[in-house]
Length: 319
Ligand code: NDP
Image 1 (cartoon, helix red, strand yellow):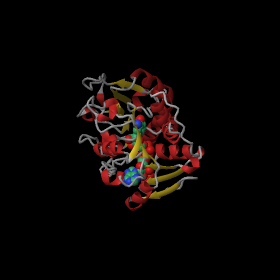
Image 2: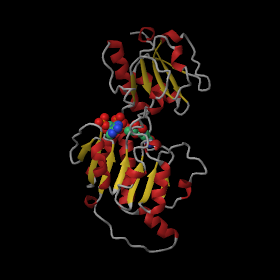
Image 3: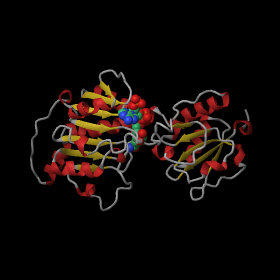
Image 4: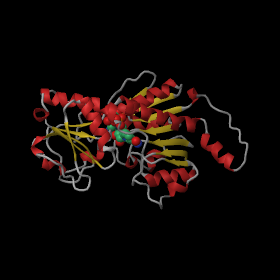
């Protein structure tokens, strides 16, 4: 098939390296015409009627209208909240990146966060700064209940990794799930009991109409006293002011936060100065061109063959 009959792919992202992506896409789909949109204006060289696919991260408003023959929008990332919130989406299938390497990168970050809290590392970091030998008798992983909120691609991989390290892992999702070694539950009714048994809570939920501020003051208060809190999903799933209050009172003893209600985290945020909080700048996992391109190639093949695409996003559901 020639590049012309295949159609072109337009790439837009102000955050990702277009040259690396272009090379990875062309290695996965030989002959694919990859056109890089101008970050400032969204303008693309060549005949916009050729463009069949758009691989995008936060393109400017009105971007999609330039391409009358678009057949697929691919969100350049796993989280689609910014994309599905738009009012200028074309009426074509929308997919997101799904990549085992991305899941592994996230799972290893979550494992690091959980181990750090499980082994009381922040306590020792503080003690060291004060020149204090501060022995805390370690607990075994099996004694520590880790609750994973959200058991999707990333959440289920992380939950299974934590099982592998011997933690008592529980998971919560919207629909029923079976994951070996994980005590699963689902639905709003199960949430209070789930939170009450999470010594370490890991937030791995997409940001949707239903999950925005799901963890408000009332729900955070259900966690065991002194629970540890990890958010690697999206900041607004948590009421940040309520979280700060819980961290100040000791109701939540420690937090690792990779995502925030406003990013970059504003200089005036009290989170920066809190001794019991580790702030990381939204990097738990990233889109990896070489491996993610294989899934994009498969979806391009499916569009060409008139088949249903994989990892389709439901804009109405929000994920
Ligand atoms: P998925 O869409 O694969 O899974 C989402 C999970 O959340 C599913 O288990 C789903 O339930 C559950 N869920 C959704 N809504 C609800 C609800 N209302 N009540 C209960 N459970 C719900 O997402 P991923 O695992 O791929 O990714 C999770 C999030 O991680 C992304 O949306 C993104 O925001 C974030 N992310 C963060 C990164 C970072 O660097 N910090 C990097 C990449 C992603 P069900 O299974 O029943 O559908």
